[in-house]
Image 1 (tube, rainbow, N blue to C red):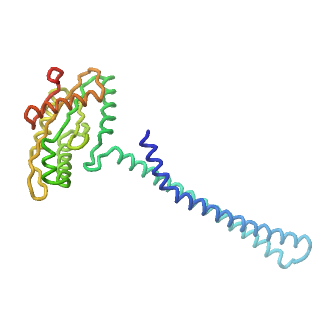
Image 2 (cartoon, rainbow, N blue to C red):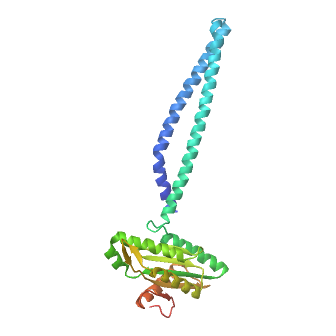
Length: 272
C-alpha cells in the first residue's frame, strides 16, 4: 500500500508541469472559441438586422454566410481540439500506468542481480504457505550464503564483488526450476522457495552448491566460490514465513560451522 502511494506521488510530480501546460492551453483555446463564436453571432445579427430593416441588402447575404462559416469553423476547431486533448489525456494515462508498473517492478527487484528482493520473496512465501495450509503439501526454503565473500570483496574491490554476485545469481537461476522462487535476500545471501519435501530440498541444495563451485572469471582472474546452504521444510505443519526463513538461516550457520561448502537440513534437535 505504501509503495503504491509513493509511486503515485512520484508520477504526480512528474505530470504536474504537463498538466499546468494543458490547463493554460485549454484557457487560450476557450478564449479563441468565445471570440470566434462572438464574431459569428455579431455577423449573423448584423445580416439579419439589415435584411429586416431593408438596408444593406447587398451585404446582408454575404455577412450571413460569413457568420455561418465562422460558426462552423469555430465548432470544427472546438471538436478538433477536444479530440486532441482526449488523445493527450489517454497518452498521459497510459504513460502514467507504465511508469507506475516500472516503479512497482523496481521496488520488488534487486538492482544488482535483477532478482526479486527480500520483500517480494517474503510476500511470495506467505502466499505459498497460506495455499499449502489449505490444500496440504510441503514447502522448503533454501538459504544460500557465500563463503568468505568479505575476503573476495576486499581483494577484488566492490566492482569485482558485484561481478561475483551477478554470476552467483545467474548460476542459481539456472539451477532452480521455473516453478521455484529465487531471490536475493541481501548482501551475499540468497533464498529459494520450492515445493519440496526434505529429500527433494536437500537434493536441490546440493545441486546449487555444485553449480557455485565452478571458478568465476573476474578481471582476468579466476575466483573460486563456494556457499553454505541451510534447508528448512514444513510438511503440513503450521509455519509462518518468518519462522521458516529463520530455521533455514539457522541451518545455514550450522553448515558453516560444519566446514562450509555444504548443505544442512534444519532440525530442532541440532538447533542451538
